[in-house]
Every structure is written in C-alpha cells, then in structure tokens.
Length: 63
Image (tube, rainbow, N blue to C red):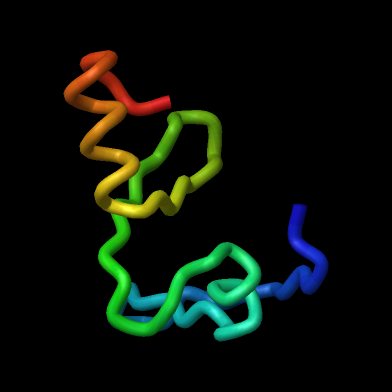
C-alpha cells in the first residue's frame, strides 16, 4: 500500500514520471532495472527485473 498516493498524468509523448518517494518506498533506487506489464484489469505492475525474470522462468508467467 502506498503511503504517499499521487495522481499522475501521462504526457503527450506517452511518458509517465513517478515521484522518487514512491520508488524509495518500494525499495527501488535510481538506475534500477524494472519490468512493467499490464495484468489486464486496468492495473499496471512494476517489478524488479530480476524478480520478474525469476518468476517467468519458474512459473512460465507473470502474476
């Protein structure tokens, strides 16, 4: 659960900027590699790349 909920806007170029506080709270530092994907119900998931790849190789899918 986010302790600092923030409303964001997708720019005309399709980019989205996340506040540093949200990234820090999630344990992500500048330069961290992440994977972004949609779970199909309107949610977008951001995961550490290593964690996502491990799950994908172990289970064959991302949850």
